[in-house]
Image (tube, rainbow, N blue to C red; front, side, top):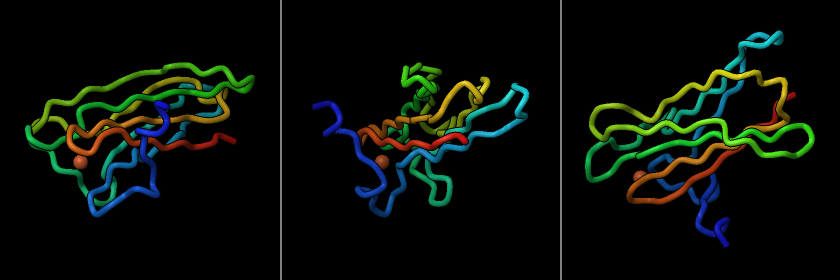
Length: 113
Ligand SMILES: [Fe+2]
């Protein structure tokens, strides 16, 4: 199963891979979702070892899953920090995936009130 290769907070070691998610902004729309890998403990960012990309998925109130965006990073140059602009009121939860070229796939989710 695909889910078996995706790790979460329970698998975290000393390097931090779980994508931190934050949703915010105005209730009337124009809001955003932020994804950061290594918010507290930075992840290495070299050619040999880096976060290559992050993806954002939204879970709508009726359960439909929407692929909302993807950001790719240039190792040694751009870090794993991305912002997606959307109306968060249409969703009940957001899910993020992050890919480390050494340590694989990592996930996280947040619920939106
Ligand atoms: Fe890593």
